[in-house]
Image (cartoon, rainbow, N blue to C red; front, top):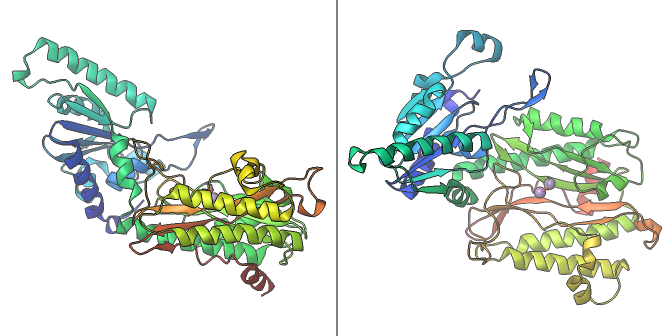
Length: 444
Ligand code: GLY
Ligand code: MN
Ligand code: MN
């Protein structure tokens, strides 16, 4: 539970006011808390609040809904009631009265009443904004309520104040645009998520040794996250030794590590709902082999070049294409591809070894919202306040046409980068990434 002293009510209120302005007096919006998820029997996964809902409320309980009423320019939070018995078994609940004050809402009520209250508020607005498709069970309820009002409105004059919304609108358009630009509060949390994540990778580099299991390295990573205040990971950690690194979303994390293997770790801390997402690749022995180093330097050069190109006004598609060209030229230089640079790019031959994109937006979700293109198909140019990952990689699975010394080398180097007014800030800079820095750290 967050205690009230930690909740910066003004941050969430500002966001709600922004949405209220955008939906206008004819609009009403609703956002729901995330559902609880069963793990097995009567045991649940740890509850994680819905990112949109948290973004607008700071409220961390399940079974809640937020209604933004454009006509009255007010916010109402519906949440669980206080319940002595439930609180003895499962923990504290705010209840509506306390939630209204602590979270700075104009109204609050019991979640058991949200449908009645929403039906009343909805009549009189002509546009209903919701995150359609996110939680289908809520879609059903909203459509049922909407239909009821439509019928009532057909029977009574609009003059009596009953107006059925004739626009079912997608709220994600508004919220995704807002979430794409991180405000100062978010930047502070993401900076911390990056720092914690970097410290965990340093800890893993210091810990790793031949014979240990991938999940033992994972334990070190999680230890550092939690010790530094990040209770959860942003995603399932990828701890991939040797050939496992050539599986992009390897999360089995069971294999023993051997001298001579590279270890690829893709792990990030979630700090107060904001994601870190770092990948580092380093040798289990502490020393890169010649072939490992050759591949590594190609990936590192493209990571560095991409970060250097990041600034306001830059086009991510151009930066991504430059990374493809750089990695493809590297593959040609290693003799893993043949022919011209252009033909290997045009035929996508490079995708045998580099099969993912250069990065994604980062925020409350590890693959954060916002998209890379405007509605008219033009690229979204980088702007101060956006946060992206930069994560080039090369993955060389064993195959008959590949020289043996390159077999099972998988390298990805991933950083988290905030676009600033003048260029960028790398949140994950504390995790070493040059060969010299990694080898020096591992030799300590
Ligand atoms: N860790 C997931 C990703 O890098 O996209
Ligand atoms: Mn990533
Ligand atoms: Mn990652």
